[in-house]
Length: 89
Image 1 (spheres, one colour):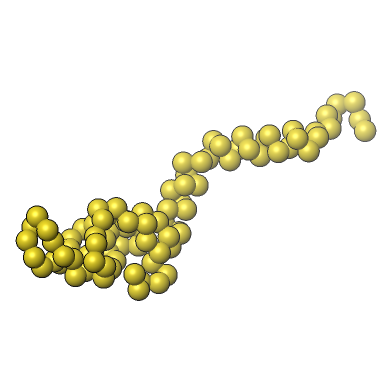
Image 2 (cartoon, helix red, strand yellow; image 1 turned 30 degrees about the vertical axis):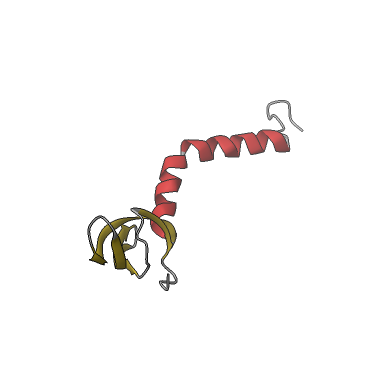
């Protein structure tokens, strides 16, 4: 071991790695949003019958990172956590 090179412990290495990841967290989250098939979607439109005060939805179209997704469900919340790998909800 030479006198000019410090030896880093495992805790110091983990702290350095955590610091690097923390500075890049917004970029990593943005990449994960577009790469992940599971994520939040917002209702774009919906087909329903009945009155506007008491609608019975037939299908809804949601907008998310993977584009427009049509979902057949009796209730259409404004925001939905949707898995685009299977669209049988």
